[in-house]
View 1 (tube, rainbow, N blue to C red):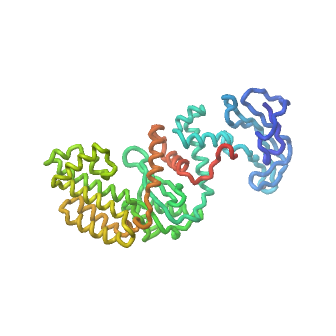
View 2: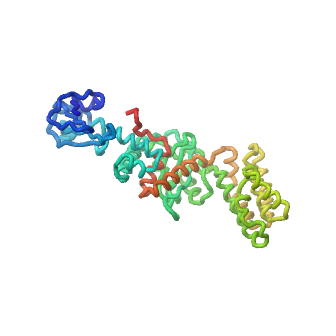
View 3: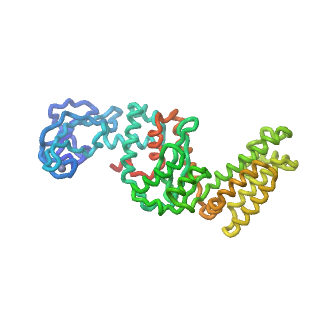
Length: 403
Ligand SMILES: [Zn+2]
């Protein structure tokens, strides 16, 4: 097929009707030859119409498949002589300057990569996955340049595992729009400093961040206090519940050495009774009849859950009573976790009122980890970060049927 182009900077190739003239090009199925007419073209820097200086050798871009054949656009591009910027190759409306693929092809890859592992997309697209990762990274980071963070005032942060072991990425989310703001390697307080810098680069103001939901990690707390809000942290209720659940399990593990009924009951004590199946529910009822330390610890765990149902004026007295009970329980793991809670007192109480949780981040985390498992890894952390941005939303990416 041969398409004739007039001015490359205003028209799109697919809007033109192919003409029967071949202009010497071989009419292979799946190859579209664009023949720009000699004219003035816009300078890539300043858009000023500039005369053609010379023509570069033919370039080829992969486009969406035509009848299941790989389809390519071919074009020789002119270099123009701009009075201000000198001799420059023109930009084309169908592709990024450095890409070997059209916007449509890239939008197709991005759409598939949101829903399936990149190695599966690579098979369908018949391209190597490293090439697709390059497309994803370039589009995501280009889109991030125009990200507007002026209205960010409430954030959440949490870590996600990059690889097996102790390799993590910290993710920051806008809790109002539920979209990812920033993802970076590591989980120390520097990650918060980097986020604060990125926020400013995108028009945001660290001082305008008046709420932050997070776990009780000392590094995150130090980072948020140093670089963002200093008294508006809400500690995520699920992380608090997890810490108490671990304390209950420590009590059980110790006690099962003397009471074998407690063996293989770990899951019973980590769930709320309402969430147990009918068969499972009978078991704790029996166990709760016994004067077990584990049963006392479990009762404390369930009682703390009640904090989140309290009206604002009752939250502090409620937590104070719970703290007294736990610290007088003579159960060391419960005393320890109660002290941890005491150190994070205000942030836990604030979370009851603000209702901020890192739940949306957990949701994104499971998407990321599921995609990672299916793809058997992401090859690199920069790919993982790009995938977090792709799945995390909020970016103005090229989409099918809109370009
Ligand atoms: Zn120019």
